Amino acid sequence: MFLSVGVRFEANVEALNMVETAGNYSKHRRVPYLVEEDGKLKTVYVPALSGESLAHAYQEHLVREALSMNLPVCDDCKRNEFFKSMNKVHLKKKIDPIPDDPKKIEEAIVKACVIEDVGGFLYAEKPPVRRSSAFQVSYALPVKSVALFATSEPQLHARHAQIDVSSKKGNVSEQMIYYVETGTALYGFTFNLDLDAIGVSAITSKPILDESEIKARREAALKALFRMLSSSQFGAKLSRFFPVGGITELVVAVTEHPFVVTSPIYDNYIARTEKRLAVLKEFGEEYFFTVASEDKVPEEALKEAIDYLKEKGAF
Image 1: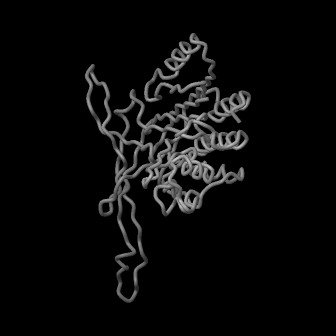
Image 2 (image 1 turned 180 degrees about the vertical axis):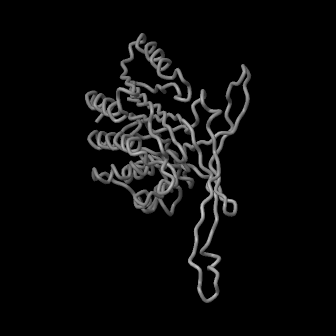
Image 3 (image 1 turned 30 degrees about the vertical axis):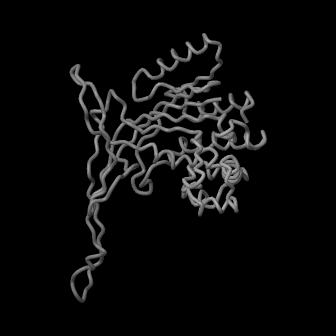
């Protein structure tokens, strides 16, 4: 089973993805973006959130869900440090001595950590072992029709120290004027989850875990997505720049084989996704599709998809 989610969310005055600090100036991530104006294409630079940022947040939620269900999570991932089993130092925490067989290495890692099972890893030693992530996430980009209104502007902030009476001046290191570049946009992004890849070897395509363990991990992966979207706990600087806004629309499609919803950066993404699914139905493929907008909150749509997957025996 394959789940694909398209999300639109409004974010006003956010600092969800910062890329660098130059002196006292923190810059928001911006990317080149194609838009149409007066019948012509042109490139503009718009605020964006990277797929890496969204993926990190999802894996943080997956850690919490896995631990609450008593599923195995390695020590690095428990600290939300997703080094994965990238070298011998990290791999030895899971299996020692390290075998020469890639299949045994993958098996040991998958059994030891749900995050590396779902999120993949690259063991860059000899023999190298690569496991692709079971989930995929796009950049969050401004919706095409309003991309020209997306903006990023620096905001001035100041930190003041009390004046030392004896010297009549404050401690310079304790006082600071700094700028944080904030973005405002209606964003869209896509999240995919291949449930059939969880607990299954990327080398042999055979199950590594027993069926009950695989189903428990699938459930944790779905709950983590639900929590991430429902709580809006993704991105940086949430403590002081929690974005004003929230999810405005959400679509969920569940199919037997990989299918990705039309990107929510396009205004016709809901209707286009429905038309594409209708073609799949003509080929005899069963699917589930739901939309959250004004009449249905995102949590309802996500729960409907999870309930459908439970009925189908996915977990």
